[in-house]
Every structure is written in C-alpha cells, then in structure tokens.
Image: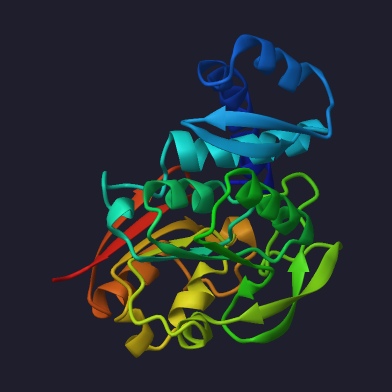
Length: 275
C-alpha cells in the first residue's frame, strides 16, 4: 500500500499546529495571545510557569516552532518525566538545546546544578543566549556545537519549515558546516564524573551519538530522556537505528528503558540506570 512518509509528517505537523494555536489560550493572557498570533513582531516575551522566554514571532513558522518547544519542555514537561528528579540533579547535559526551553526550565528546578547545553544552529544559539540572560541564569553553559558520533566538522542541514528540525542526518539543499564534539569528549573536557540527567532531541542523530559512546562513559549517566525518530521519516540511513534497538543497547549498558510512542514518526525513550 502506498504511504508517503513526508505527507504523514506534514499531516502530523498540521495537527500539532492547530492544537498549539488553541492550547496557547490556556497559558497566554488573551491580549498577548491575540497580539502573538495576529501581528508579526520580531520577537515576543512569554511568561510560562514563572519562566520568561524570548520567542521569535516575525512569521508563522517561527511562532509555531518556538512556542511548540516551550510548550513541550515547560508546560507538558516532556523530559521531566518523574516529579522531583531534576531538582536532585547536579550535572545535566542538553543535546539539541534549540532556544533553551529545557535548559532554562531545568535551571529553575535546581540552581545548584551545572547544565551543559549544545546547539549548533547559529540562529537558535543566539536566541538561547538571550533567554539565559533574560532569566539571569549562571548555571547554564551554552556551546555552539553539535554532539555527534565523531568530533570535527560536519554538514548541518536546515529544515525550511521548522527551525527545531535542523539535522545532522536528514539531508537538504540548505546546510552549513558546524563544529562537532562527542559525548565522551564532553565528559573528559569538563571533568564530568557523573551526569545525572541526559536530555537528547537531535532529529535522528541520537542513534549515532549513543551507539558510539564508550561503555565507560555511559556508565556515568544516571538518567536519559530522549526523543527518538523513526529512520524512515527522518532520513536515518541505517535501518538498524530504531528505538527498539536503542532500548536493547541501553539495557545491555545497565539501564531500564521505556518506549513511549507519540505517533508513527517519533516518540520518547526513557532510561534509568539500574541500582
């Protein structure tokens, strides 16, 4: 039976956008809600759960992408899957920080933590730094780099419709060259003995990152919350790179895992190190 994977992704995106439009009335004051959706200011400050964030609002695709990530990370707490966990974390690593929605949220849960955040997109990284300054955070350490399978330079492909979907994996005509480092180098460079929480949202690169991380580094990680991406939908060339295989791998590395599908294209994979 014919099935167009790109049409499916577009359909899912449209449904999410419509839901976001109406759901945003719950947490934006009516005057701000109208102003946000009906005007085209360069950016808008939203205050969600006592967290302030600059959201780009010059066009519809920027509004949808930025506000969707804020909703996911701050309101729906997509990665904060167990109440109180983040408040007990000393070291947090954020791979795919975007405009900083998760990093800023995590920093507010525990001021004593050190959060190492990685975002290769220059535009997203610029916005991320503005949000760190807006919230006067001193425990978030941003880096304009990609975490990848190998260090060095790599093409970083732009998604023309969603600034939260730029990717090291899914090839497009528009791309830039970005600096890459590895999870192992991150631990060594910053002398990280233990990572209490690893958050990953990197549009299909999660497989290469974790499969290429040595066991001695993975043993230093207590919890992982990542968004997995079905290879067929996200240009992942290795068909063995699936959420099921990643869960099996993490099980062998000493984690208990749970897969929470969101739709056919993606979902969440949670991992907690066995005691």
